Image 1: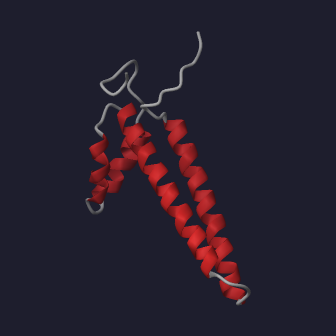
Image 2: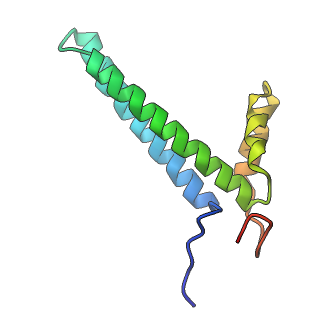
Length: 110
């Protein structure tokens, strides 16, 4: 039996590995900006531009992966908007990302 790669859903491990990667990249980019800022060495504007572009790219990839993760637990991708609700919204999204995926096919799998 060969494993199949789902282009629709994202497993818990795939989602959390990307979150770890995103955190590491963010820390490295922050260090690349704030070390020259604190020592007044070199131009910082290009580093801000690179950091901004990387942040936008990582945010878009993370958003699409979050929607795929929600599809894995048989929830609509529109549940991403629940994160805009103060206090409770991000907690609900965290719980959703920690839930185990639905066994077998669901309405979002081909």
